[in-house]
Image (cartoon, rainbow, N blue to C red):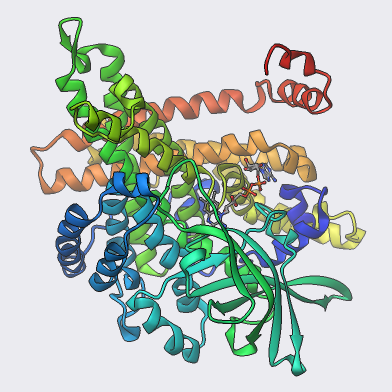
Length: 618
Ligand SMILES: Cc1cc2nc3c(=O)[nH]c(=O)nc-3n(C[C@H](O)[C@H](O)[C@H](O)COP(=O)(O)OP(=O)(O)OC[C@H]3O[C@@H](n4cnc5c(N)ncnc54)[C@H](O)[C@@H]3O)c2cc1C
């Protein structure tokens, strides 16, 4: 517990205990990002850039060649946005193409696409229609296929996966009105009856994507508490619930700012009888299953963001060239040109980060929890800035709907819809704030293992002494290493004059980041949890370093294939310059900032002492 308190605070010990018990405690495989936070740049994991192998690329190409014309011909994103419906012929067509089984292994009737190919498809979809992307990714990135493939029994896989691959739609139901970022608050219950052979499910789930149309829903519910170490512990269990089960009701379809075509709703369960055989993984393992499913599945979000960013870049490029004001294309005016340059450089880094993360996932020998979360956090935030820039570059037309543009004879460029569709990426499958806390928790795991007992107020003096000796032994080697500036990166010069400096910066800065993390843990100890801004800055620096690594490795690989092509190097160089400036600023702000003052004022706002500022409004 002391370990977790360091990061999650003492305010909600039960939630903390439940969440901590549900996290993956062991690291079976290495992680590039986890090592980065420990001051080690594992070049062997990312260099040379892991290009997709030829046969896998061909599989992806063949699928995309079939999907592209279907999307162009049948999926009209503005019509879907206007009507709020994905037409049934679109859903049937996508099912015929195998889109609902992309991630389901071939043995169960799916396409068995690699993560790289799946993400290529999601990027393509993300460039075209947000609602369609979410229909497909909610079904297989987090819906029933993902937990079934990861944790289902053979019988469950045989029973469900072939149906799901053919187009039986599935959903993932974790959130409730009182349980958002903190799922341990959930109220939905599943109580055993008839000697535990059946469970009676009761409760309501909120915002369940695909829920209103899903035939199969993975529902997380509280089962009776268990005694763990003499203490009662809340149990959450995952159930495969079928729409056909009596007592299953869709009570509301939600309507949002964007993604108008998704089916998302409130599901109510009243005494739904679910057989024990529909429990996935085991009793009490539901929250762990949900967190692991999200850890693996959330990599689809950055892939979709890459598609959106590329589309915005394309729109902005065309408009910045075509639109003339003050005697020149707006793209010739510096204020617009720099936006466009930064959009291109950031899109390149996002693309490289997603390709790298996908390739690492395909190896199946890398712990992906940090890579996927980092890609989700970085790409969703970068994408939002890119969309915002695209709106700005389009000027008034960026704010006008595609329908209105078309009605008055202009090209129906849907930047307004893209903006509405993209905002959710910073919220679903872990908000940016929760992603930062999650990444910080995992990044600090190695230190927590060493220092946990030392900081535990319940530990005996002998225990602490033993822990202190272990910590000394561990840090006596590790800590001085973080002050040495030699580079392990195989000859940074091979990256060429433009990138070698950035590669050295990544190495040096990972040491500095590791020191900062370590010093913060020592300084704040169990109070570290409340220093969310400090942790957030450290996490963001790690995100930029990861993106820089991906961009440099990708640019290097591209120019090796085509030595005359210097554009990738230009893009990686610009991205790295921008990112290293952000990192330098973030280091300055680590201990020189206005966090405390802003926090104090926020408490005054919350207490109503600054209500006078809200005068003069309706
Ligand atoms: C379109 C859409 C689709 C969705 N699809 C699904 C789905 O398919 N299945 C499903 O189960 N759920 C789904 N959700 C729910 C989604 O995952 C949640 O909205 C999300 O987890 C955040 O929960 P919340 O909205 O209750 O925010 P809250 O948890 O109430 O958070 C409110 C704010 O406080 C911040 N915050 C919360 N806790 C902390 C903390 N400890 N420290 C710092 N900041 C904090 C959050 O970042 C946020 O800014 C969907 C939601 C939407 C809108």
